[in-house]
Image 1 (spheres, one colour):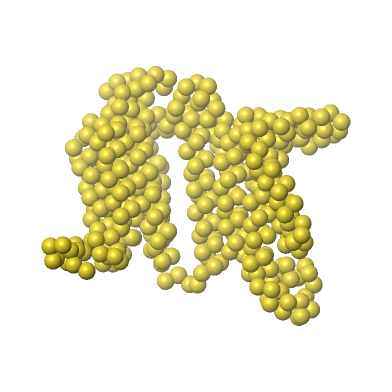
Image 2 (cartoon, rainbow, N blue to C red; image 1 turned 30 degrees about the vertical axis):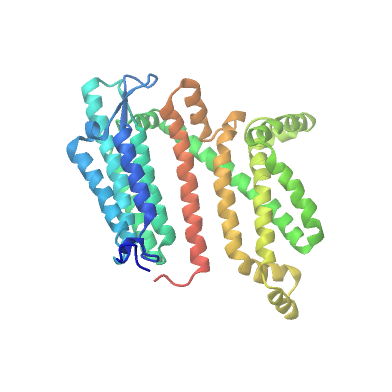
Length: 400
């Protein structure tokens, strides 16, 4: 079909041209944020609000030019559909964008600290966060659409190595976020371990109880509706309310059975937090198990039964292996959900990364809030990435 002027449409407008619009959009948003928002924020101390500095002011012409050049490279690669390894190159450039932006923010913090005194706090501004998230989105998009496992892993590993090297070098030590961590180093490690313990215990409870409920719903389809209706009601209770509602019953239970206190069970602390996390994990686990088992072909089950397998052997050797992709996805979604919900455990004395979030809110210290929030986000991303990789390992053929 010809245009009104009798010419062929431009190649990038043709269907199937392969023009990657998402990276172009992300680059445009990142560029607008850098031009309009502050790259870092300089404050006289940790409690007072600061003054935003633009990328040009914070990083100088060299640093600003380098970041803008990376955005141009990504946009150029997105407009070259025929280029081989285009997604890998975009992923590497996106990782470079993340590492370089963090390095420039660290340099700006060191320079401002020397110039204005040791009480000065340099926080990461809106422009930095938009740029960093743009790099993360580009990295995730490339990994999601790249068919080759090796090509998926290369940009991610390069980015993680770059960020790890930057953190280990001490180059970021003058950033306000890093200084909050340095002051609370041991407490941070303790709360991180506590967060993992709460999440792991809640997940174990959800897997055992939810798996049994899902298996029951699979074997007794007539009971699936009422069972899932009850679990849906539990899921609709606001998370903070559920944590609070469990305090009263557990307090009464420990009053009736004082021996429970010796096991660490009390109205506040880890016990109600683990129970609440387990209850929230019941529905996704039960539904995932039920869906995975229901998707197994009936012929496979009948063949296993015809070979003389018992019901337990059919579950272990037929149903679970064939339902494994769905079960791994269920595990991934449940774990990520519980990592986020475990933040609220700090409100009932259970500890975890939420401790820093609520301390920061009480002290109006934004970087202390970020210390807890970003750590929880990083844990969720690591869990998601690890379980996605595990799912690929079990459900796909050899890497290309």
